[in-house]
Each structure stands twice: as structure tokens, then as C-alpha cells.
Amino acid sequence: MAKFESELKMEKIKRVGILGGTFNPPHIGHIILAQEVLNKLNLDKILFIPANIPPHKNASLIEAKHRLKMVKLSIEGNKNFSLLDCEIKRGGVSYTVDTLRELRKIFPSYEFYLIIGSDLAKDFNTWKDYQEIMKLAKVVVGKRKEFPLEDNNKFIPVDILEIGISSSLIRDWIKRGWCVRYLLLPKVFDYIVKRKLYL
Image (cartoon, rainbow, N blue to C red; front, side):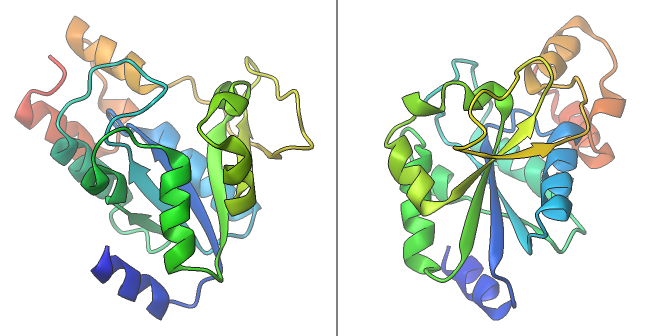
């Protein structure tokens, strides 16, 4: 975190998006969502923050080192994207509010934009200290047709390119022996194949 903190402070940035999740694995849908929000809200940076243990998902996770590496491979070469491993290093259950508190303490002058999908927005009031989350960051919702956004006053809605890809779909296809090459960044696909992940 110390090295990342110094690098980020050296850059002339003000508006920072936060995209968390298990990234189990990261796929092109994650990258498209991040890029669309960056473009449409004129953000300076998107932080990808893989969860250690997610509070809202029950899917078994592969080792954190693999998920971190795959995110790193996914965002390689994009100067507007950065990987932050604070939730992995913190251990335990990864609560968004804890991450935002940590980031706010280090970067008090930044504007933070928490990016979630509209599938998560409907249960947002069940998140730990969700009201504090909304004070620490503006909550951006990538709109999806199958999960209509009910409360536009609470969130910043963003129309996104709809791609019916999910990490669970990719894991299922791999178990079936189906090709997932075109659902992932090429280096991530190669990484999964080489290490025989999700079989």
C-alpha cells in the first residue's frame, strides 16, 4: 500500500472510481464496465480491488494470488487502471466500508466513486454501514435491463454496454470443457489454461 500510495499521490488525479469484487475470474465485462464509467463520468483512475472473502457471495474462491495476478494481466497497459490488494492483505471478510475508510484516510482530497451493478443496487441497504459508504463515496450503478434501478436518487446511474458474461458462467463453461477464450483477456485465458484453474 505504501508504494501504491506514493505513486498515486504523484499523479495529478482527483476523481477515482473503485471497482471491487471477487474477480473469480476477471473477464471482459469487468473491463468494459470500468472503461465506460471512466469515460462517462470523466474519472482520472479506476482502482480494481479484489475481495479477500466477499460478504455477499458463496462461490468457492481460488487462491487470492491467482485472482490478483489475473486482474493485473487484465489491466496491463492501461494507465488509467490500477490494482490495489488492500482487502487481500487485510484478511477476513472484505467490507467495502472498511476499504473506503482506509482510502479516505490516505487520500482525503479525492472524490471516490464506488462502481456496482444494478443487480447489487437492489440489496445495497443490506451492506455493512451502507449509509456511511454513501458519505465516503458516490455510488455509481451500471444499469442492466434485467435488474431495473428503482432508486435513482440514491445512486448515479450509468448506461453500460450489456454483455451477458459473468465469472460464474465462465467457471461453469470451463467445468463443461467449453471454450471461454473470447470471454477473457488473452493473457488471462492463457493463465487459466496453463494452471488448469476452475477444472
